[in-house]
Image (cartoon, rainbow, N blue to C red; front, side, top):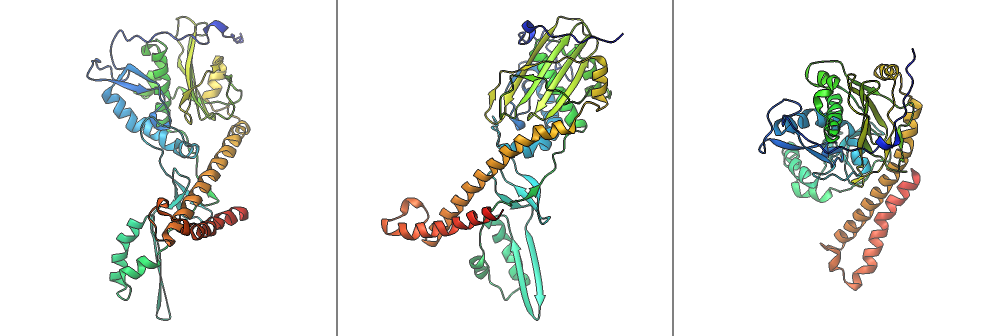
Length: 391
């Protein structure tokens, strides 16, 4: 007999039960929790913009251990989007990530939108008794550290001469590529840990989630798959690349099903339990990592057992829908990148003009310096403008 879909009653969409930990045991290792070893666990990792925490869920040891393994892998895979979108983290700052320029050179994309070499470049070309040296360093300090070795290998050169002929630029590459990898064992476990943290926040016992426990601790099969053949999120804000995790207890089917989104395009469905016999419930959490604000959305989770099987078999992923989700995001990222590049070009032009005037700060500009400063600024900034027009 075909399983009919059950609509979720409207009055259970926003149910949120106060979290209570009667057993006071770590959900992962079952260590007895005390005031000394209880940690605040982020539902979504801090590194990807998560803010809400749960206390009494896991111990400090498991927090640190899973954070450095599971969550760290997830964060590395999502790092390009975190940096490109400029998410706001409660702690720490966005990190650079490796890209390839149009010429194949490895570069580091920095949080301010500028590019840096992945490693310094040192090339020597000898022709007709003439030595041509090309050195590219990431910072002035790195260049200064390389120069003594260059002088030792080429005694005719002097350290002062090399420093005087060095030029400093901070330019974005107009074309670069980076892979958006997602998945793997550690990432999968981070996703399921997020689901369990939300289950705990909803007031349920983690022991009810037998499939999640089997996957995390017993070497069981993954209890999740990727899904995007229909949109489950209601009241979705425009131009918000949010994270959300939503849990539904379906007593008729005996399922506890979770739905997770990262940046609005990595979408995961997980069946945490198929033996649930409690009350119907639906609760969740959504955050815009760019603004740090929680979002008021609804997620309608309604999956038949056959659909869950198909999710696990990766039969409910539509790559056309993935591209549709990504297109507005990358348009937004390109605009952000342009604004960052413009800001960097202005900053570079100011520093160039001050350097030519031998002034350490714009606060020391005199009235008679302004015409020369303006001319130097425009000269430098115009280079960026013309380069942008060519691109």
